[in-house]
Image 1 (cartoon, rainbow, N blue to C red):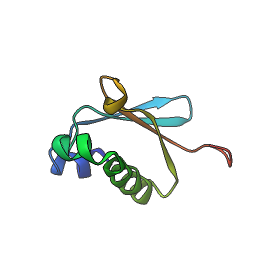
Image 2 (image 1 turned 180 degrees about the horizontal axis):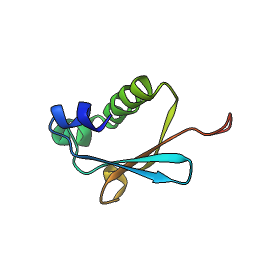
Image 3 (image 1 turned 120 degrees about the vertical axis):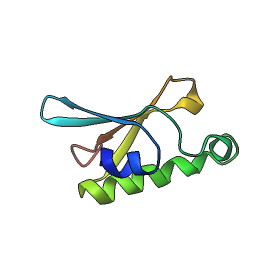
Image 4 (image 1 turned 60 degrees about the vertical axis):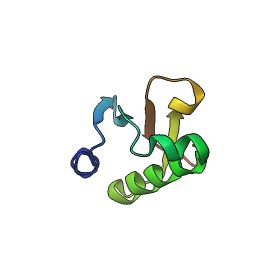
Length: 79
């Protein structure tokens, strides 16, 4: 996953949180567009979900004032 995002010039940190992955985007691949079209973040979620084969939920977002965007796999039916 990190290699795919690095090819897009998006630094992505991958960490383990117990048995789960935490994916942290350290830069936005679409900074100008994301400011105008918030739903562009779903493109990253769908890309990660496709690569990992599991649904992904966003837990932090630069557009909400966080200093990075953080994504985690959905671990149960309720997310």
